[in-house]
Image (cartoon, rainbow, N blue to C red; front, side, top):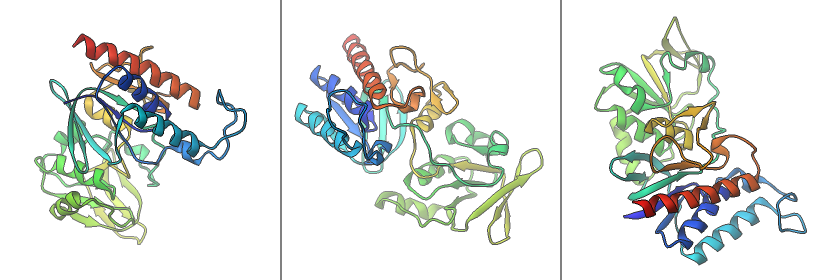
Length: 290
């Protein structure tokens, strides 16, 4: 049993980890090297550096600092979080249990280019199998995605319906060994999706080649799960694609915190580091109270 799991190894996540590990808490950071900060060639408004530095350099130094202090890292992709007495965090390779979780994956910026997708959100298009899968019992549903996360979401739907198609939207499947085996449970459609249509609710998927396919529900699980995806599935309050937190970085779910760009506000390294520090301090107090 771990004390703290931090999902995301950007400045917010690393900052929080430094606080929790120094307090003697068993801390694991799970994340891949996909922080948007890595794309920043020159940073010259962050405290403590007389000359411009790159985002990549800043991230690498932060990780080295955390490792030196005893933080453990897992470079896997997180596909699900569940809450019972404690938290269970599922990656593509392993399962972990912990007492507190910090969401710090940044803000989701990947948009699926499908005509009329937004129009049918809530009318057949969903981003949460846990929330909406029940409504499609025995019906024909699809999951848009091509990585482990999409297969995981399809597995969530399998007890409700056996008519499930994975729509890769023209991408080749990129799956770990575990999820590559599970993909055989589903129909795989590799066509590029142009758009969707219907009357009051979704009725068809329209492909670039001019063909169409009827559908009752479409779940979006494109690329990797983000903080907002995890929040929705856990019943955490969100607003405008951001996780809602209080001044102590707490969500409405006990033991779950969020920091950095996923909470909205000023998207700056200094803001993320500060929020991570606050979240780290609050998780320390929360676990000591337990």
